[in-house]
Image (cartoon, rainbow, N blue to C red; front, side, top):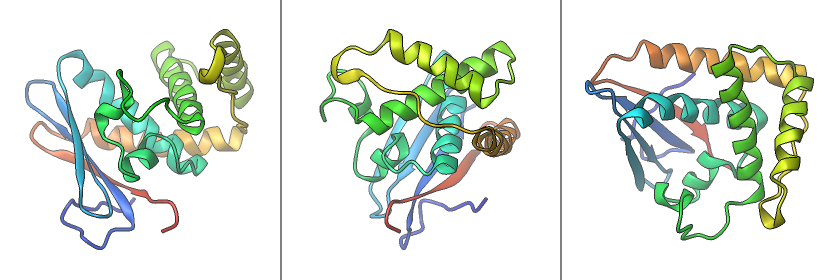
Length: 181
């Protein structure tokens, strides 16, 4: 994977930077193609959980070609605070909710030590989606093949191993392709 820095000014990608701090916290900084930046410090337990969650977003969104998931919305100008109450930009778009469903499934699989097939992931996702299908927040389980799952896992293994090897004070940097670029 190509690594880019926030100093790249002719970017056709969102630059993702996750810094590991000595105190166990982390910071996610995203630099958009126009050079604008949004960031969030992830302290305490969030510093342990969110880098892995954010890297799972990267794997799922890049492999599956999502352009309006978390990183696509950030590239389009969303700020980190826009993804939480009081929801300044309104409801999270359907595609971003679909992505979050997939991320949640991979997070559960990782925590339980599972190795789910695409059919297993779809079954779990359909159970979750059916139990949370109220009004505008309804989201269907996306189509997912065993090949998709294998490709996601390969990217995820790569970025998670790179994150694990990132010492305190350093950062992992990734490039997320921007729609239309």
